[in-house]
Amino acid sequence: MKKQLILILLMAFLVAGCGGSAPTEPTQVPTLAPTETPLPEPTLTPTPEIPLALLIVPTEMDQETSDIYQTLVYDLAQSAGMRFQVRNTLTLEDLEPSLRVVIALPPDPGLMDLAPAAPQAQFLSVNIPEMIAGGNLSVLANTERPDIAAFLSGYIGAMITVDYHTGLMVPKDDPVGQVMLAAFRKGQEYYCGLCQPWAGPFNDYPLFVEVPADAPLNEYNAYADYLVNHTVETMYVSPQFATPELLTYLSSSGTLIVSDLSPGRKYGNWVATIQPDVIHAIQTTWPQLVAGAGGVNVTSPLILADVNPEHLDAGKQADAQEILNQLQAGQILTGVNP
Image 1 (spheres, one colour):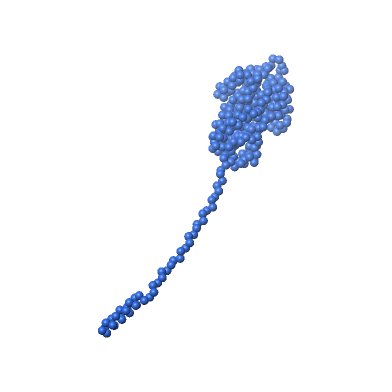
Image 2 (cartoon, one colour):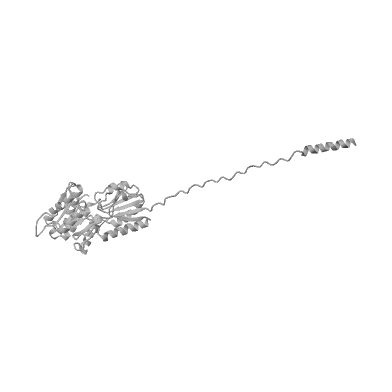
């Protein structure tokens, strides 16, 4: 009996030792609030401006001619996805960053200074005298064969002038001026041989006057007077002297004019211009300008432009055009080295 009591007590003690301590509360891990990652502020990307093409035309250009150039360059700009604007002048303020192409007609708006100020653009000078190609400035002009235009001018002058009273204004002390003079004389001789006047005055036509490079523009009329006063009826005017003031003065005197620089407006005394096919040349040069390639001399076949049928009728124009074709094909030689 006593043994049984001891056994019961021992078992009770063991049970109390195993389960006597209070259960431990589970440790709670603190819950952290989620951290919000700030989103970056949106960056505003400026919309790139549409590239711009500019056409520079003089205010005195007749509307018909101006419209031809505007339509041409507008169509080219549209095909290239460009904006198009027409200006009468060009300044530094016009050289905006989106400017890509500038096509300029005479008089010179200052291309030699403005072109380097806009390296992102290509400039094309069209029949502007004394331009030098380089950098981003390309030059379209009758510079490679001045003898052809002068030869044909002499031929046309002899063809339309009574008693061959022709003359020309050329630069003094200039090799190109001497080429023009010699080629003009050869062209006249090609048409009429000795070309001796039969009614007088018996001057040695063609007469010529040499204009110094430093002669002021307002003195050109005085140099022209020498020819006018010696009964020159048809005159070739070298491009650098064909200012609006001189052309207006010669028009008032009734002197007929042939040149290789378009007058830009209509004069009653203008016979014809012998110049590169400007429209075709601009069209063929346009892809290079858009591609950013420039600084070249642009060559193009010569054509008769600005023809006044009152002075050069259809038959005589066809004759002159045939002579021009043969000159460019090398079938007729000018007799001088250009």
